[in-house]
Amino acid sequence: MNCIFCDILSGRRDGHIIYEDDLHVSILDKYPIDTGHCLVIPREHHEKITDMEYGAVGEIFSVVPKIAKAVLNATGADAFSLGQNNGKAAKQIIPHVHIHIIPRYNHKGTIWTKRSIEGDDELKKLAEKIKNSIT
Image 1: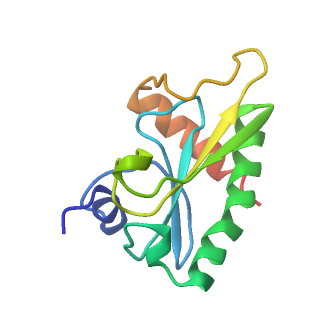
Image 2: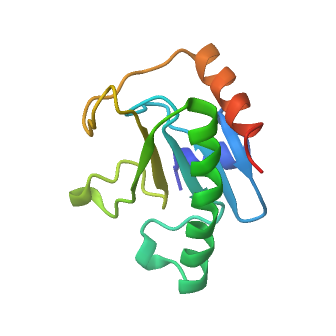
């Protein structure tokens, strides 16, 4: 299987990890919609959320508030959006379940399609700041 997220989880590929536990990892999105955009990913590979056991779905969503709170604290965002796509027609790019946490800023408005690429140094600093905000 060739999966970018599985490669990050195994250490074969770099990712800006901001949280991890036995079942999940959260990383900054490489192509963020806005500053602090991150993903919550289950360690176990499933292409779609409908492939997961119901308890595992609840477990991954139980991590989201903790990460979202840390992102808000670290970035000063005013709000956040959640996204979870399943299948190509839903614009799922990586075929491994993941939940997007997208910070929103009053002064910027809400944009879904425009993404910017931040430098690796910026992402490293932001990842560290969010990690330190997790309680």
